Image (cartoon, rainbow over all chains, first blue to last red; front, side, top):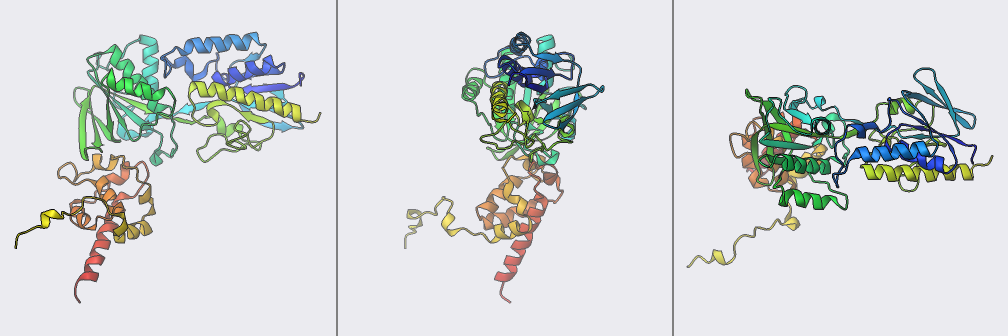
Length: 344
Length: 116
């Protein structure tokens, strides 16, 4: 098995974790990252739920593990095609670079939903409508949250399910991490600006993690975050740049309107942009949501529908950080089984 | 005679055993998407009629599911058929058509019940 070569596509947390585990098992591993550094989308993130820890620490420790285990990392290289070449695979990159491997692990991640598609929410039109990703970027860069006028917001509305569970934008699935992200960001705003009122507008609160409900409780008890069950129908900018939003308070059974200083849209996860390229010229397929399809959702989650090509992380479905890392580790087990059971 | 009806008041319970499905089955036949409603309230929030009167589109759907034919036949008159509810629905339900179908079916039922 030691002479086997695995190509890992994507240097986010899934790719780094899987690459370092495989390399420690004695395999030759090439980690191919399209950007100039590894870490992927976590490089823009300020704090993680549910413990408010720093993603930077995590990314740095994964980078060290990757380096120390002997993984060969290639930067600024985007794979556009995976083709079968006999028993091996040929990977082609944008600038004519080619890689050969005995197995491929696709850890190409997800795309963030483009909130301008939901025009009625005014993202890209109104300066005080931002996304959850913008919030993290601003917090990381400036450590504070200001309106476009440069003032502290007195009232913020956080909108759940933007680009998820919405047939109008073609995404009927739940991105599952947004609910808890919204609660985390609500707590952060309330800690930073104690006089600021924070409202979460939700359809269902999906707090699936074992520590998520205690964060919800903390948000209500300690931070007085208000939760309103109703989906936003539209947002409009007023002359003073504040935003008027409309929803139904469904538990009251009455339409509601509210003027807020800022709106944060909890944007969901979409299949990665490179997914459609990567499934060409091989037998990989996508599921009904456009994410890479597993050979079996229960017992072969990391196996694609093409033998020898495996998957890890959010290329399979929306996942939280801890799940992504666990999932990457489980992919390495499947790859090792694949080599062990294969006749030379 | 003393009026003793207060001793046996009408029940407030939703009675699923005597469920009036005459409207629901008709709507589902022509607009099956209606069954996917999750009561998010987007329709009510944007509703032109609901901002001025106590009309609530989401509750129209709930009453339809519970067979509240009486309530519906009165409430449904408030809809102005502007169609904004349909534009915002995340389940892509043609709500405007649901209201239209309820109206049609109520008219049919009235004709059936009126003496020839």
